[in-house]
Amino acid sequence: MTEFVDTLITGTHLFTMQGEGVGYIPDGVVAVRGTRIVAVGPAAKLTARCQADVAEALDRRVVADPQHAEMALMEAMRAGRL
Image (cartoon, rainbow, N blue to C red):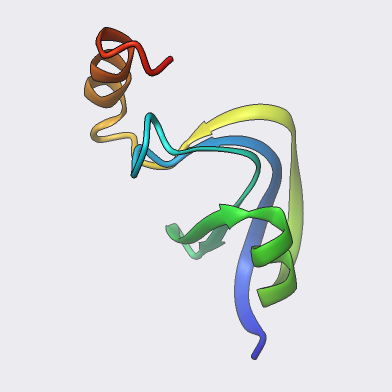
């Protein structure tokens, strides 16, 4: 089933701050509806599932959890996961 969103931000180095380390996804996509992030994940999965205008991130880093990003990055660095 196709999910309609406003924008897919593609070509990102995506950091979800979930799971092992910092949740790094090398070819990540961020799906945005209105002003809210509604999904994040690997390009192969989200581009097949979502239909939207595409904004190319040009190989930039995206942190999908800005509220906890700084703390999670520091913790990962201290634990030697980065």
